[in-house]
Image (cartoon, rainbow, N blue to C red):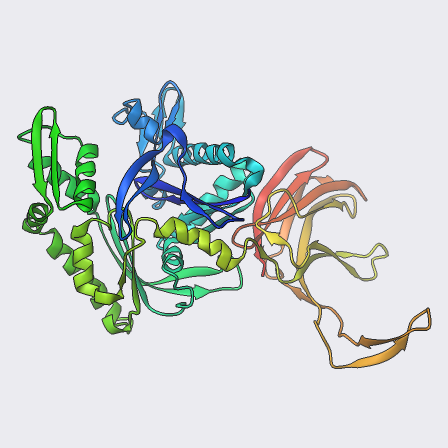
Length: 505
């Protein structure tokens, strides 16, 4: 059965969810030894979900995700941890490992390749209809281009990119709340992000996208609560952060934690933990951050009363300490019952909302002289209705040399618009003597869309008369850019590789 898959590349963990296209069943995906399983408190009771730690180690082989912990590679100098935060800033931080220079981008790529290979092994490559990648709204264009580059490298065509705010909106069944002010909250393991956003609709991909009015961020998250738990028990028994996170999870499920660890009995109540966090000022800091968000919003004409819904998300949000503060501040506006899965599930719903594939809305052609040289001809390179993105060429043409010594070829790109209907109609008789009603449509209209910046392809050495010189292939990117690949047939060399040209519609 065909599956659609969402991959949420978070700072510390990745979440992978799939949906069966026939039954509609959604599940958190377990990817063997690279996954780890955690128990989350939900309004329907405890629920197990599967995560892939966002790390890669280059040792005797490449270790991915949970394998890094299992094989005790966490503290190895060859381990890349939490690559997304560097990618978002375009800080690739290359390192020399063995005889290789490896960047954060390369490490993230290797992790995603491992994940996608396992998804294909699990379901069958031909059964994965679409993969949707979820990225931050703040750095959407950066991450979209990174993912596009990654998909090009591995030959993945059926994919989409959508931002977290859109996913949260769809997860909470608020698809009709576009163009309304919303607050999107993300409580991650190492950070907290507050966004005041609007979700807008477009007729091109992505069909829905967050427009950020303002935002506030803090390097404080679930890890800080785990450190408080770790320090609380330090005099009795040394705990690693993984064990402290496990204790936090148990306190989310029950108000009292009690367990024997290495022969030592450990006890901690949820109330005592909350008192310690208050003493450290964590709650006060959160409230200041929220007030600052709305102070900033007031400069854009948005008040607390203007906000219709507050969308809670993130694996740390089920922590009662965070949730209680947000409930007191936002009251019934806060939606948090799907916080642990809102983003990956909303991504799957986006596929249903936006359709599985966006298409081009007009014909596009290149112009060339007729053989007699007394006019122009227009050859369609992108037909109307072409789904995108594309990978292996929509159209390929061969450009001939026009004269001896020709130094360049100019590509003039036109949008071809034909009237869809007309009120001017007449009755005509066809060759078989049948009467038909025909519309008198106007002539096709050509719009010269790259007149200001035509694409100039250099010829070195110069062309010969009527020489078959260039093979030109056209594709479309995720962002609807026309991509041009050019091969010099005389030199048997590619001189342009998916070069971005005009934006199509």
